[in-house]
Figure 1 (cartoon, helix red, strand yellow):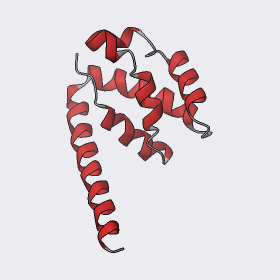
Figure 2: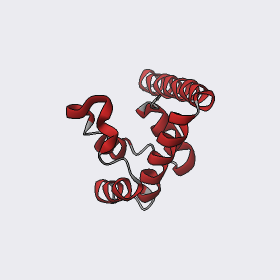
Figure 3: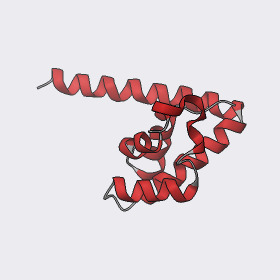
Figure 4: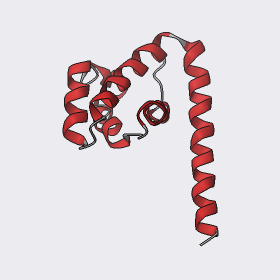
Length: 108
C-alpha cells in the first residue's frame, strides 16, 4: 500500500480550499512517531480527522481539510496511477512556492 506524502495532502487542500492546512495534516499524522507505517490505525477515519481539523484550526474550511485528508489517503493508497502524478504536481508546486518566496526576499 502506498501512502501519499503530506506534501500531496497540503497541495490538494491548497487547490480545493485555498489553504494547505499543514498543522491539521501534521496532527492527524502524530501517531506515525510511535507506530510507524501502522499509524493509520489511529486518527485516520473521517470522524477523527474532522474533530482534529476543527480543533486544530479556526479556519471555517478546516472541517473539509480533515475530510480531504482521509479521501486523498484512501484514493492514493489504492491507485498508484493517480498517486504518482499528484506527487509530481505537489513537488513542482512546492518548488515553485519556494522559488517565489526566495525571489520576494531578494527584491526587498
